Length: 276
Image (cartoon, rainbow, N blue to C red):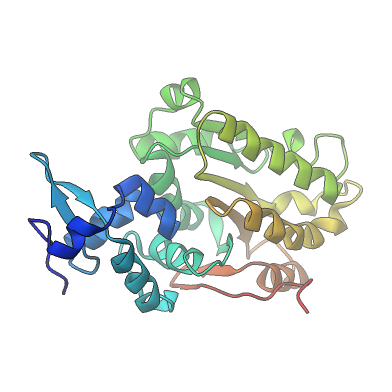
């Protein structure tokens, strides 16, 4: 356990201390995670001023990174377990690309809720491409979790789309065009001052007979270099195991760096279809 320092040490006085915003950027994690890790005694910080604000020595952050190279050390059963694992892997350069495998909408939201709350609950925006015709269910779930949809939309933090407005907006699916769509969405949020954001999509749209749906797995693979350019962005793709064929599930397993099941998250995979 690392003690929280109440006064500056001699060494701390001689080096620049990072603010919590700077430390979060350095580790590619959220400020909430930093607060929790310092509170739990697993990350050293310095407290300064009458408000005891957290400051961080770069050496302490580097040491933390070395201890956290194995993302599987996080507690999956904790409410933030999956988020901690993904953030730990991101600190080692692994893109935040998650395939979330669920059975039914209730299980979907149980698994997806931590991602939503870790972003919208912390002022980070979300773009959610939900399954066609399920808007009322999505709105009800957000409301049950205490999120004010109208306020979030007005603040530019929540954008809800159906597949016909995203993946299939031209009546067909073209992987390279969807990658461009995603990047433009990321850049729009960046222009509003948000580097950290959540993008999520239900993948059952690939069951339609629209032209180009066979490019879906290739598109998933193309998301990885996009996420390497925007390391603070998390993309969570929803795969309904009761409705999608095995070949689609296998493709998802091969193209995502993180695979989430109801009872576990396998985090930090570095391989994709395009890997050598």
